[in-house]
Amino acid sequence: MKSETAKVSLEKTYIKDLSFEVARSATPELSVSSPKLEEEMPPQSSVEFETKVNKLDDENYESSISASVKALNADGEVVYIAEVTQAGIFRKVGEIDEEILRRIMLGDCPAILFPYLREALDSMIVKGGFPPLLIAPLDFRASYDSLAEINSSPE
Image (cartoon, rainbow, N blue to C red; front, side, top):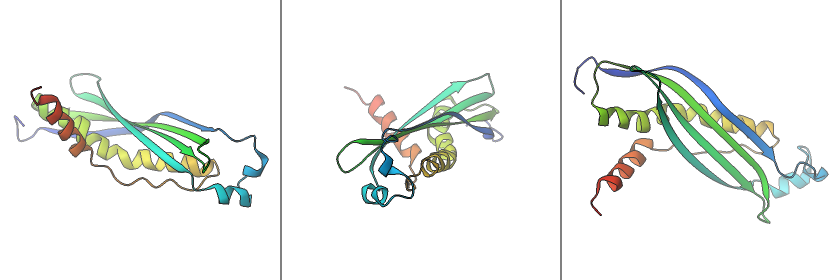
């Protein structure tokens, strides 16, 4: 950092996008109280994440993390698709080196937003009548560092 007083602080969090689709909702035996649901659950889930940063002005940045979950039953059929984008406004105070700021915005800010995203995703899935989806914490800084290393290595 260029100054001892430079910092980045979280100003606001919000859900930017939210979507939940139950692909098999027309099947009567898949109601919440049905034993058939219990036999088919928990579904196999794949989760994909994406992080983004938008500069709003000289001091404010929007950092967001998106998660897309596709749950499959034992037959490989889609049971549900859930998508959430959790965002936050982060304020930069003081002068911060561009590369350090980028690392904060793509590594540290998503880590701050992750618990909010995980709660929104889990709540939506449970309200859809499915078992909770437990997502282990992710190391966004390590992911950013490894991606930065790959991008900076000579070909």
